[in-house]
Length: 261
Image 1 (cartoon, rainbow, N blue to C red):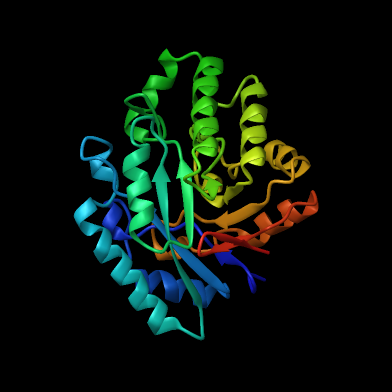
Image 2: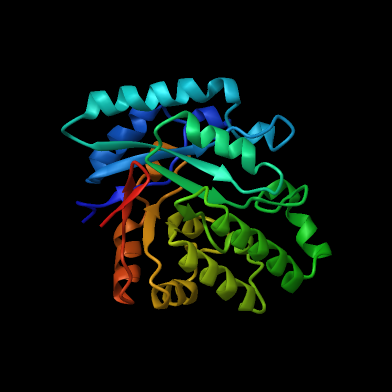
């Protein structure tokens, strides 16, 4: 049963790589028995950063207006919230800060998708893993995650162990634990992202071991399907909730950037 659960990580066609209208996502959430959803489309960034994979700055108001229209239409039937998935990339913090001040967001995910110029989760560039030392790669990645946690910009960290997406697992683990320490110290949550179950690694983000380590540190979880089409809404949420609660973890949501639950 998905009653009472929220899907707080989903996208819209404005990001350039998703299908389905915001209304269709809301209807899919309602049909799945979810209590609510929070749209978290890929935020605008400076024009030189990752342009094909996110909305443009001149589309941000359109995004807000579309979500507000869905909120009004589904009022009383589904709790619809407004959020963003914003990237953490050194040098862009002030740009992101400006975005976050421009609207009344409910929830902001902070995600790391790039190591330097390499979009490491993009299937087009997966061959680069063969040229990298995995321990060094994960060390660099989790240093950026620590930076995201300490930035004061975000409510949660997105898909914590994302570099495993294509099956390249962390050979060490120490850097991940340091990142979790930073997340806990900053009072953030973790995006429990079920999209990993749809990827080659066939494991949600974060891994069961990292979930247990997060619980030890008092870090809560926000459920997210990372849906890029309506049919992915609430993907394997009953399993996700059972996994989290089975190790004593807590599931939360955000309203007005304030934790609920």
